[in-house]
Structure formats: C-alpha cells, structure tokens
Length: 211
Image (cartoon, rainbow, N blue to C red; front, side):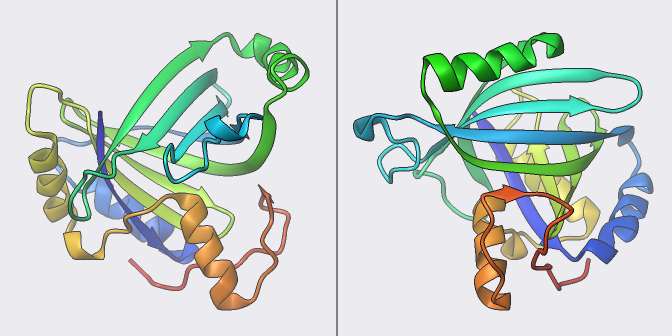
C-alpha cells in the first residue's frame, strides 16, 4: 500500500523547492530523469479502469537520463477508505527490459486491444533515505512535490507527516487527487483546451501558487 502526500506549485518554484530539499539533513539526492507515461483502459465496460467502482490507472512508464533507462508496468488504485490529505493507494509494479518497450506497446494495443486514454511527460528529481522518497515532478503545467513513505516497518502516515513538517509544509494544503485531476482543474480555470497527450510543446495552463 502506497502512502503519500502531494502538493502543486508554479513552475518558477522548482529551484526553491530543490534548494529546500537539499538543505535537509538525512535526505540524499538521487538524480533527475525524463519520464513518459502512457495510461490505458480496458476495452470491456464492466472492467473500465476509470469507473467510480474501480478508479484505477494502468500505466506504461519509460524513465531515462544519460546514465540509465528503465521501463515499468504499473497499476495504481485509490483507496477510498483513506482519511485526510495523506492518502493510501494500491500499487503494483512490474519492471521490464527497456529494449522490449515497443513490443509491449504492440501487445497491449494490437493483441489485448487496450485503449490509450492519456499520455504525459515530465522531468523527475528524486530525493530519498530509508524512510521516505521525495520527488519533484516538472509537468508541462507546473511542479508537483510528492512525499511517499518507503519504510514498511514504520507507521507510514507518521513518516509522511514528519517529512511534511521538516520541509515546512502544512498537511491541510496537500492536494488529495492525481496529476490529471489537477490538470483538468487548471484547464477549466484558465479556459485551456484539455489535451489527452500532455507534453511540453503544447499550450498548457499553469499552476500559479508559489512554494
């Protein structure tokens, strides 16, 4: 079970967020990566991943920089029994060889006939220690800051809450939904066309609140 809290800020907040994380004792910088994520849906209506009953995301994610390449199949589903701004989610991950990415996409689309619903790109900077992983995600529409528990032997909610306070944040300001909910919200607020393929080269809304 994944336990995390998420915040959204303006693009110009990135350097200030990174500087704040670098100043925290016991937190180590990993690296910055480019990620492309495709989200698929089941073709049968009774298994609609986006339905209220299921409310899950089936994703293929490719991660790379000049040092590494990774590819992962993930399933993520909200736990509607969660309370408060720190939320819990079911998450299953399977890693595959990045060289098999194209064949995987062919299997999903031409054999299983899954429908590509959304695709997005971002740059991710990762900080971590034995208890927590903190990521700074640069989306085309703003910055997401996520604090996620990584220690299964501790109370995950307490771990996340502890690091929220260390960063200097308020749990009441956390965003309870996912990146696509925030994107849709910003499109409506700023009268922008909603794109199913969210990339840096398109006309995007922008988060305006600063860190």
